[in-house]
Amino acid sequence: MKLNAFASVETIATPLRVALDNFTITVHGNALSLEGQWVDVVSPENDIFKDAEITIKRDLLMGKKLSQMDIDRFIKASLIVGWSFEEPCDNVNKLIALQVWPKRLTDYIVKRAESIVDVNFTLPELTNSLNTPEKLGG
Image (cartoon, rainbow, N blue to C red; front, side):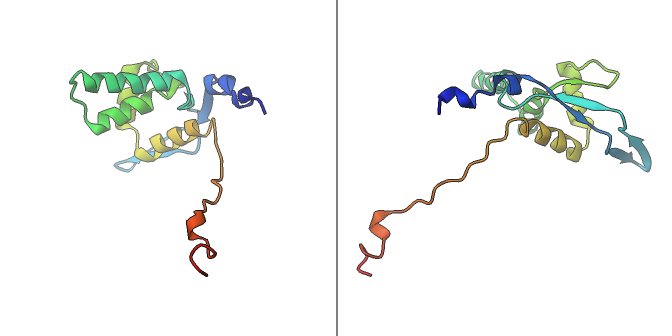
């Protein structure tokens, strides 16, 4: 097998449209359906996401004070590259959205982004030759 058999550059770079049709957000008894709304996301393997991680690390090294919540929100925002909402899908609006959207909604969006490139593997059973019955006198 060639190493480039794993190349998924096209998959990583292609956004996935996440339909939000099944979500209804209820706040103080007022229901808001997200029917017809969508968010375009990229994989965490995408350079956009990796650049966001590098930016956060650089900011922390430069002494910028960031809460864990701010870091998480910034990283998640980097996964979102488009949406159907009226506001432009820019960094400021993405951060606002991630602050006001319910956690279940943001978790769903992140999970869908993570599913773009799915790596499944099974670790081989590890054996220690010193622990075999023959070596232990059994």
